[in-house]
Length: 398
Image 1 (tube, rainbow, N blue to C red):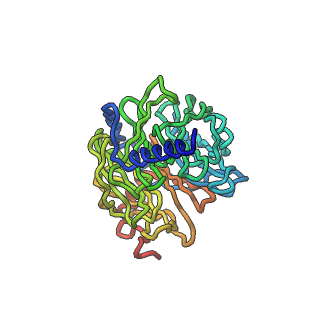
Image 2: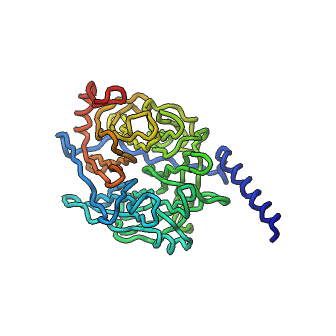
Image 3: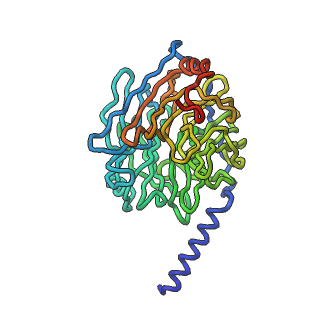
């Protein structure tokens, strides 16, 4: 093949990629998303007294860096936490670790779930690094792990799926998800999925090449597909500069997406009324955002709870706070300070609620450890009653 033909093919591929990348999403084949399985905002809690505890997850003794944790509840009430750790963030020696905490017991020693060597073997392609693990359960024994693999920097990343059929005791091989027929790279995952009617999932993802865009990954059950899911991808429209969406379902058709802002000082907010198929142009959520990850969840009383870095200065992550809002997602009240230490870093919070009514938060602590907080609804209500003095804010830091 001549050099001219090669150059022409490369230019054509790049043109198609640019057209696809900057267009508004076009749904192929009349795709119509199933409704959300919106989590109930009420529960029968077992603890009437306020409960709050904090601890660090066990770390691999060889790792100098730990980052980007997520967690889920397994059948029987055990917790599974995953994160990536190693010599440094982009180091080939990084691996994805997992640890389990059964009710009434301590966290297990961290176990390597996947590293670049295993990923290269299972995916049949050279992998230089892995990261950003996201874990969740179907409520039974099936557990899913999405993780990012890269052949270079994060802009070269792809999303892969591993599945466990026995409650995370063993894992099937990695399956690379094909999200584009042309340039299947620069896709990353971060926040909690939303369950769909019929057994599928809406997973918030994002794109980082050329520009930053929040996207939606649709995993729909398909016994004939690799990994057991048919895969679709759409984009939150008119949202360049935003990334790492945190999606909260309000009812079977309505949802809010809270967006990390890489280009401004405020948290972004977009709404959908058609089960995530289309989204409003992002507006402001009424909270600052220093270009950092956030996580939101629905709680009792028709309210939302947000974990976030309370600062508008880019890169400032020396605090971590809780705020509460109505279901509109714009009227926030700060209710608690979780961390506040100058020159330190607390980042990438992830929150879930377990069947016993407890809330669990994990986050990166100074890029060296993963911290785990547990609290209940009574503790939240105590913080709300004290909201006249909710702790240091961006303009009255002590």
